[in-house]
Image (tube, rainbow, N blue to C red; front, side, top):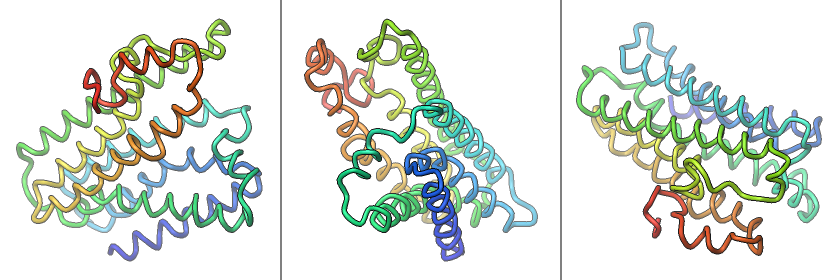
Length: 252
């Protein structure tokens, strides 16, 4: 079954790659991040002719999270052209097309496969009644979802104001964390992994939130985005006084 999920992701990201080449915009891969998880959730759910309540709950939550995120990214990027990160790679990489297939699209498919592991593990193996870990998972997911959605809304509203051109947001959730949306996304996947802790060997799916947390905090999230703000007025002061990731905890 895990091989089927891997093959499904290979086909999915390859199709997205083709669309990106037609559009000449590799940043559309960000729009298809959320739907990739939804595809895995639905595919793994329908393997059981009589899915239990945990499977339905987790699949619904994945769909809720994935649809919101995809719509948000689509509306954010609409009419703006290729995102600065992907545009930079287009301008600097040799053998750009083949390299982007492996380093952007296949790599994203691999990360989706790993990060989605709590979801398909639950949908393949859940037989236990709901319990403590399900309640905790829902609470943690809810906190993460609200953080991500509210932070995205606050940032979008801030950017729509012409007076804020060239500035960075420091109000709302952004007063607690420099990247509350990234923190929220990490929390979402900690929540899904808690659901999996009800199952035998479900602890193995903790690789999912660990990976997404490390990626967002130290690789593709915080460091890459903050390079754009270096040198801007007030940035060093905001950076010194505000936690990077976990609200109020400055060393995280």
